[in-house]
Every structure is written in C-alpha cells, then in structure tokens.
Length: 166
Image (cartoon, rainbow, N blue to C red; front, side):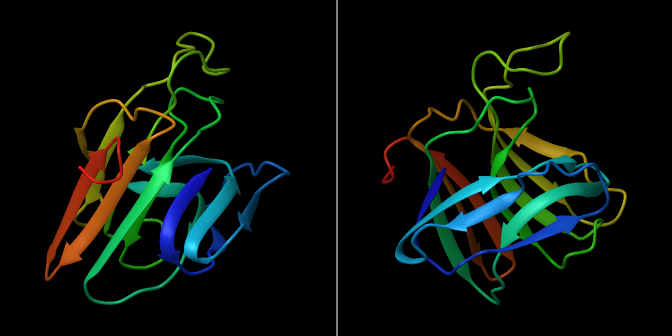
C-alpha cells in the first residue's frame, strides 16, 4: 500500500506487452488531502532499455514535489518493485526517472534466489537504449519507506527516508 499527500486519483495503464495477472487493479482509497492507493499489478520490468509493466499515473507539468510512504510490498519476486516514476510520455522507451523499493526477506520467485533485493534504487533513462542506469540508496525500511521525487527546473531529485521528515 502507498500513502501520499494531496495526489489526484491514479489512472492505470500497461507499458508494453506481457502476461498480465488477472487481479490487476488500482484502488484510489482516498484521493485528495490524505491519498492512499492499493495497487496490484504485474509486468516484466520497469528499467533497462524499455519498460513492460503496469503503472498508475497522473499527468503534471513543470516543477513538482511528490512524497509517498510505502508501507508494504508483497514479496512475489526478488525484483518486484513499487514507488515513484516520472516519464516524458507513455511509450516503452520514454526518458524516465524512478525511485523504486524492492522486497525484503523471502520471496516466492525466482527459485534460485528467493530473497528480496532489500533496496531502494534511483533509476534513469536519458534516451532510447540508455536505461540501465541506477544508484542504490539503501534498505527501504518497511513499513516506513518514504520515497520522494521532486523537479526544480531541469533537475529531478530522488530522496529516501524512514520518518517522513528527514
């Protein structure tokens, strides 16, 4: 579950083609002042040279500052992820910046490495075929994994915290 402050309702979309889980959904529990979203999704990857996954999104322009608390992430796969993603558009090779948290502890898949990555990653794609750029920022610290993406001019900042303030 993801909690946020003052975000609008999210729209769900698929990026690319992949096997979709039948229970794909976004529940906009409380859009507005104290926004809360429950997201069930699937996909292949939201990273690398192209994206194949399900996202919930809203459109914005110019400067922004979005902060969310990720209180849980089901440990289905070692590389499952949730978090914030900024995209130039909805094509699979769009320029993008993301701040994603991965599972902690045992996972169902893959069978040869059934342990979550236990990290927050800052990922970016500056152009097509330039998507394998990432910086590890440490453990998410569930249930208080605070993620923040902000844009000021042409710079996008990614920050993490464990108390919503620092």
